[in-house]
Amino acid sequence: MHIHILGICGTFMGGVAALAREAGHKVTGCDAGVYPPMSDQLRALGIDLIEGFDADQMALQPDVWVVGNVVSRARKPDGSPRFPLMEAILDAGAPYTSGPQWLAENVLQGRHVLAVAGTHGKTTTTSMLAWILESAGLAPGFLVGGVPENFGVSARLGAAQRPGSNRPLFVIEADEYDTAFFDKRSKFVHYRPRTAILNNLEFDHADIFDNLAAIERQFHHLVRTVPPSGRVVVNGLEESLARVLHQGCWSEVRSFGSTVSDYSSSGEPGDFEVSQQGRPVGRVQWALGGVHNQLNALAAIAAAEHVGVAPVDAARALGQFQNVKRRMELRGTVRGIAVYDDFAHHPTAIRTTVDGLRRQLQPGQRILAVFEPRSNTMKLGTMKSQLPWSLEQADLAFCHSGGLDWDAREALAPMGARAQVAGDIDTLVRQVSAAAREGDRILCMSNGGFGGIHAKLLAALAKPSTPAN
Image (cartoon, rainbow, N blue to C red; front, side, top):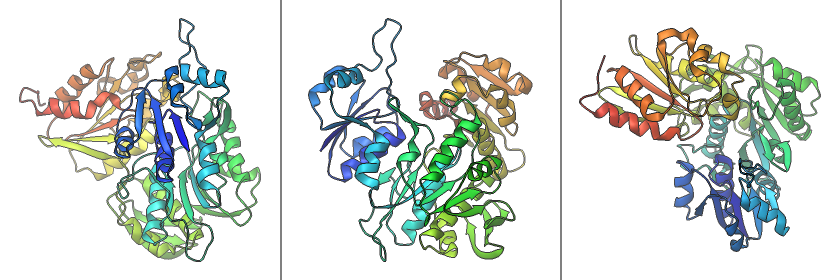
């Protein structure tokens, strides 16, 4: 069939596009303000991208329109629709569906789905799990909200058959955000996993959830879809997840993280022993840092064991895991100053990312944290009071305040002179490059393109006139 995807450059919808293309469908799509890595991946696949959501795209006449959750019925100040194409689709009575629904009906049906849910670490843990299964020769399909370095693509169909089973494997990042403007259920209820990871759970997505209890309810909807022969892998350190399971669970449960969990670890995040019910079963030695990645690894190992991969083999495979683009990705080094790119945007994710980098530095090396509160939750200012806490381990912090309705300077005031704020990217680049000195690590954090700040910083640092303190 010919499918046309509205919002094709989102990480999820871009993955749907890649899967549909691999399955033999004709794929086109549209979006606004596209940026790498997804735009690069789509062009490499030969998928035509159209800028904007104009109604003249109706002339394409696809078999079905697949609608991303960026699309809404919103109006501009002058009363005209923000998404005229969607209005035209509705007027024409043309067939349309959501990305998760299309995926469930055309890709996931008949597969053993391993779904990775959680407020943080979904992309990394999904990538770890896919790599473990790949290393075990199981050739899984996957859809990840990023580009795993081990695979170079965010999605693939995988093998049509699995030895000893009539269910091939598919690993998917299971997002709790809503499906589409016409389907307000969380995306993950469409996936019907047989193995489900509940990695962590705290308040997020303040634009669609009123409180933590509302998100816990959605997570329980996911738990309700796991069959009795399935497995729920749950973080034993999270009270919120204990409350989710207390609402009812009808599948096997395996916990990780705490000393009394089924899967636990001992040692530093870069080199640790894995135990299963108190018995050592493997060792992970890798280049990743941070306790959060240690927990991600335990979750992936526990899920892989459910489909027959021994923990010792899973731990060994993680030694070859190369992380995900935009997860502590080194973008370049100039005059001994390294510039990193990371997807962190929630205060807890910012804190764990900064702390993970701090553990890897030598005494005297500084972290310059550069961030933009770009997610819908952060734009609302719901978590602005947590920013000083999230940046506690940074030596200096620089905030891009463009587009915010709240006062970033006031929110960061507890940090005193350690924090600076700029309303535009060029000013931010000047602030950071003026403060940077040899040995510094500049950590740029955003869930968007951040105005190409990484390249701009590297260019500014390369200029001989750049002051060095």
